[in-house]
Image (tube, rainbow, N blue to C red; front, side):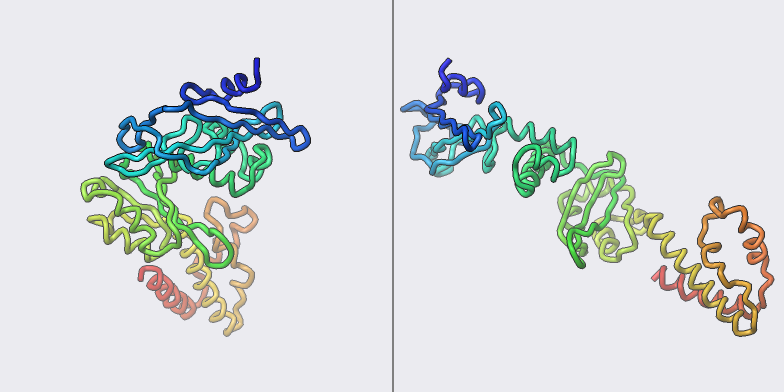
Length: 320
């Protein structure tokens, strides 16, 4: 079998496309394949499918294809364009690649499987592409998936910010908590970042959202209030951040009490910081007697009044 016929089969080409020539570079471990279409072929407008004669050709491009016996393989072609009376000059759809891609469809399918099995750096090494190219392949796959997915508002939404780089560089991530899927990503962590998610839905679709879980970041809460009815009943502060604030409040109270007691020579709270921060079920047995004594109220009433005042200030700041 001639090499051109072999690669016609390997590339899955059918009429009017055919392999023009194949060049092998053993030193570079590379195979280059040039394809062309038959003369006087009519192609469909990519917008309306009207069959039209070729208007001209774009500059030659190369697409990375599946390796040939461990040799890097590239497909070369000058894509034809048609002049549609309704849509103007358009490049036709190519059977081997998606629009704006530098990889053939078969290579992208392989890349998606590899990316699903390992991290981006490892996938880039196995596929012999750059880190940026691997990210681009993954981004295209996500875009295709989202485009095919019907636009519906989840009943239970999760909102969080993630550090995207050094310093204060963040992105906003919105998830469907029931399906466990990421639904939306936006730059920064401003109210406008989350507004972009809610703006995709109609008022009727947004009415189906039952709860939005988030940390206590006010711009996110303001976005929910601006887009959902009964927003205050639907905002759910996540347990991780809430417990973080509460344990900080407990420690603030302990510090205030310890200072008040130490001023009168009572060191009963010294070294007790972590006793107050344990969950009840996680308190080590060796500390239970001491903690029970501390909780029994054997401290001067004045120090308790100081602690209540400190606690009130902390809790007020949390609520506001």
